[in-house]
Every structure is written in C-alpha cells, then in structure tokens.
Length: 252
Image 1: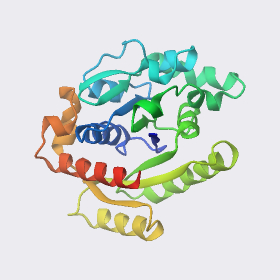
Image 2 (image 1 turned 180 degrees about the vertical axis):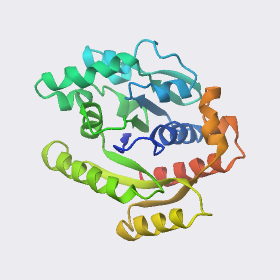
Image 3 (image 1 turned 135 degrees about the vertical axis):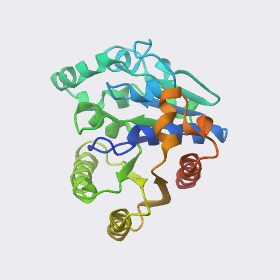
C-alpha cells in the first residue's frame, strides 16, 4: 500500500515545486512507481516535466467531475513517474470548491487506486492555505514542508503548523509530518546557518538531514522540461534530492 504525501507551505518561493518534481523523479529513478499531482493553477510542476498547460485529462477535471485521480494520471516521460497535470482553469476551483458541502474531502474521495498503483504519490500544493491545499492535506497521509533558509522561515512555519493541527483535529486525524526540508541553503552566509540551527533546535526530530543548496542547475532545469537528475546529474542539487529520496523512502 502506497503513501500520499503533500508538499506544502503557504509561503511562495520556498522550493515546493522544485522539491515535488525532483523528489518524485529521484524516487522513480530508484524504480519505485511514483505519481506527481500538480495542484497549483500556475502549472509549474506540469511545465517542469515538459508538458503543456492545456493537457487533458488534468486535476481540474478530477476535482470538478467524476474522474478519479488514478484515472487522470499520464506518463511523464520519465520511467516509473506518472503525473496528473494542472491547468490554469484550476484557479476557478478556489471559488467553486467552498460552495460545495464537504468540499475539503473531494480529493480524498477521488484518489481511486493511487495507493495500489504507486508506492509514493506527491501532491504539489499552491502557495496558500486555500481550498486546494486543504484538499491535499485532507487526502494526504503525510506532509513534507520545504523551508527556505531565510529570516521569516520560523514565522511561516508557526502558521502552517497551526493549520496542520486544525486539519488533524477536524478533518484528517491520520495526517503526520514526514519532515521539513531546508532549501536554498547557502552555507557561506551566517543567516542560513542560524536559520538551520533554529529550525533544528525547534523541531529536532522533524527536519531531514538533507539540505538542498542554492544551485544554478536546479533553477534552470525546468526551462529544459526535465528534473535536475536528468539535466545535471552530477550537480549539487541532484545529489541533494537523491539523498532526500532515500530519507523519504526510509521514513515510509
């Protein structure tokens, strides 16, 4: 039976999509059937794997219709990795979903056979705590939290953890934190080192050992439509996500 993991943080620009795409590709590269679900109307994960924004089937058709998530999955072009693509139309779901009674559980109801088909399903969430992210957290077994090593990291974490506690209490008692991954790390700066120290002191058992560095290859890989492990397999960014994949697999 597979696991469903949401990659979430309400702050933008912290590396959620970079983590979802490259972690998914790294897990798939180890031979594990993996599904990446793009829940962001910006479609960044979809484009990062070289797909068009208007492709069908897509996640909006799942949320607004009768298709299951498993039925909307398509090959990504990477062996063992499938994707449920996004579409700009998904922005409408943020208005439509709250009008439906019990809408926070729609994605969970539409999972279909993903846990039977995929060892890991990664839900790439938008940079907000709106209806789409709530749906992901209700559907997920665990959440991975990317944390950019910057000044406001802990402040943003506090708000996210409050939201997770609310969802655990009211909607998804089985939800747990798989771990926090420090991203965009520049060990040459005192600020990055201090943020890492504070996050590890506050959450000693939750922070992954892996730290994702600032890396040019990571930033340019999406423009080629491939994950960094294919674009620059010898880069520091590739090495970091391969290491993270091993940690995620070890934690189940």
